[in-house]
Length: 588
Image (cartoon, rainbow, N blue to C red; front, side, top):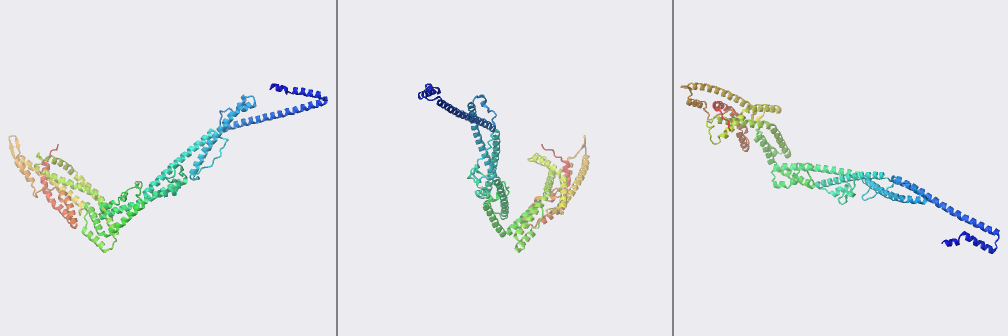
């Protein structure tokens, strides 16, 4: 190569040219022209080469400047503060500088593409969720690719979009959960109401059907609003149907009770009667409030209504019996014969509609229950009073028994009963006082006297108080008489060590004082003058025989109160003696 260069160098060529010229015999002038021409051509070639080199250098400088600018722009857009954006400072030539910048520029370019792709995906997802929430996207529809701001591709911007996407995804998840919850509620309501769930839910939105996945459910505000309205409508229908069904169930129960419908026939409507007292939230059985169930109950009520009118007389007398039982339980006397005649006349005359007659009797029953409720507290105390008086009577009979302290069978039980009886008897005055106060208050509130089996309760109580006072005075008189008798007996005989009592005379005196001319003793208690058990038996037997003897029994009771008073006074002698002379030892 070097030999070839030596052979073709400019000097060798010039020597060869001189040699040729010498052989030819060219003049000096021609030779100078040719040499000048060669010099000009060489200058032109050098100039072209210099121009080309200059242009190439300018292009390299331009590329270097562009690379520097692009590097700075990418570093700024990506927020890469850690990258050296002036690596060419350590290089000497332009190409070395470009070679130093090229890898960093390529790296940032790849990073830019990845960042743009990430931002595009995130922004597309954001716009997708926004469209789903706003309801502007159809089922399966995708949003267009968003425009990315390539001047801001920093991590901070990426994190902002990621946070925004997370919030939207949470909102979507919350809405989807709410939509699914509403869909489940609609499903349960449709089951209870016997409605077509698919038809109902697709009327809200076609994507809410069970055949469509959750990721494609519509979660827009409009869908949620429609679901709320649908649930409200279904709940209102459920409430109205339940009220209707409960009304029908109550009517069925009333008609069943009136006509003594057998259990087997009632069991056919257990699916209706089981919800008679249920709340709206408690009714969850599928089909429990279906239209067919309500229609079935309605048909049965209409059938029983027609049957009820055909048995109106039987029903009316049953209700009258209920009314009489209520009054009998509260010791209120009714003229049952007149009531039966009135019902018979109304039914036969047809002057009153059957429904009006039943409603009137229901009103009377309701009024009787209210009156019974107002009398309950006083009647309870009357029962306590009568029971206490019966125990008082038993206690006096027990005190007159000379063998009460014998160690026979049941003696200790009688002792315990006697102790309890004394406690009850000691509470009688306070009980009577309370009973009088409450009875007077009741009479003031109701504006009528409080009757007990046809007799004024206040009159009974006043008579009892008077008889009790007379008995107490009689007891005091007998105690004084006994004391004087014992004083006379104690000085009957004088022994070697003092006065000696004659036991036979004491016994004789006791027998004289305890003589029972009537064959028994009475203490003036209402159990002697007013036997509750007898009155109830008389009331029941009287009602079965026409219920005409209640007034007579009440009058006899009032008469017996006055007739029993002398017997009470005569019996007071023995009771006073036994209460004072025979103390009862305490039971162990």
